[in-house]
Length: 471
Ligand SMILES: NC(=O)C1=CN([C@@H]2O[C@H](COP(=O)(O)OP(=O)(O)OC[C@H]3O[C@@H](n4cnc5c(N)ncnc54)[C@H](O)[C@@H]3O)[C@@H](O)[C@H]2O)C=CC1
Ligand SMILES: CC(=O)N[C@@H]1[C@@H](OP(=O)(O)OP(=O)(O)OC[C@H]2O[C@@H](n3ccc(=O)[nH]c3=O)[C@H](O)[C@@H]2O)O[C@H](C(=O)O)[C@@H](O)[C@@H]1O
Image 1 (spheres, rainbow, N blue to C red):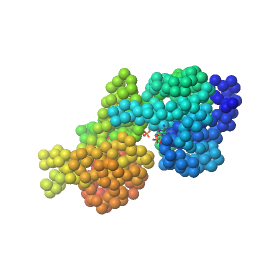
Image 2: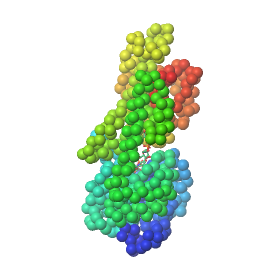
Image 3: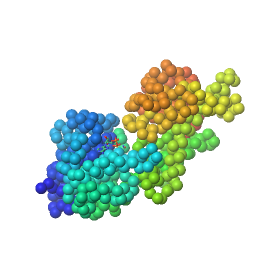
């Protein structure tokens, strides 16, 4: 008889011993940027984890001890050792994994569709696989970020209906992942307290016991599963709204004639103030998606969320407008042949910005949504490329992690940029690889720095920094 945790008759310490001894077989569904580190942490504690993924290449690489997730310190060595000692195996056979497992951990993508509606198709597919193998005493844990009420209204009923089991003979809990790519193992192990919430008391108890073994930080047991879903989404909503405030303030740089980034830093010396950092937009499949887990899911329509989304989504165009502004002044200066400082950039000699973009060659540095992470969903750099091309520019793109295939841009290695003598350059993502770029090898160029990482003192480039203005 396989041991189980939900409704276990054993004392908690005996349950912890069972869990640590691998007597509670674990299946982790989704072995991506977050799922593979999570499965690895479960495996290092239990020695008995089966990872399930629909991507055969992912599964094959893991089963030879290879880590397909880039940029996670410690993960390659951990995966190699866990696979070598049999603690972690991967499979595409979800049915067998679900039948064998007692603890089912879901870490598959939760995205939005092309109409910004929450897309739970991957979670539902995982739920269907789990349901086919669900047994009384099992527990299902959702680590994926979910729209509030998704577990109680959609996923738990689906588990019961598809498995034919009564809803009170298996556990369901929401234990959202609060990690960031690049720090996943540290975060999963306990950089932050772990929030857990069950659909019933017993589910919450099981989740608290399990993560008490995995996490080196506090366990925050909240009232129920919906509260746990809301906690995770609220964290993301706070971030999107806060970044929108920073971006809105950055737009005031010219009119105020001040360095808004410096003003934000000074304002943040006040403990209650934590204004985030202006940038070229908000990317990834988390922060820009979570507002729609409320707006296009619940009847309530918080105005702040929609406003923040429109502010952040407008930043790529704001960046391209600065390119146009800079090129217009350059063009006017060449017409006047007497040179025009940016202070005169409202002179009527300046051609209309959109005309000045037509036929200009503009290079975009950075296609991923943030430095060091191989993810392009909702990426500002990609939106900047599209906006430039739509306004007539010829676009070059450089990124050390991804290429411009399928984009309105031509791939160019960053180090070859001087050979192309672009009229303008946009830094959209501050990849470390761009630090090696020799800006003195470029002829006088309009440069828009979305990430405040460039110091072009001593060059003849016209530099605009989002949040600091024309330098
Ligand atoms: N990436 C991040 O920084 C964080 C992501 N999250 C959440 O974690 C979840 C997963 O995100 P990532 O790991 O970044 O996604 P990812 O795209 O890196 O990986 C998803 C993996 O799931 C697999 N998959 C898709 N459908 C599946 C199914 N039905 N059964 C089994 N495997 C399936 C894919 O093949 C892929 O390997 C999302 O809900 C996200 O909101 C939470 C915190 C941080
Ligand atoms: C509340 C919070 O900090 N959430 C984190 C976030 O991580 P994520 O990888 O999405 O990166 P991020 O640092 O939020 O950046 C998202 C986007 O916003 C931009 N960004 C970020 C912070 C800022 O002050 N200004 C800004 O413009 C970034 O450049 C990027 O394009 O989302 C993750 C998630 O929920 O998946 C979450 O686990 C992480 O802890």
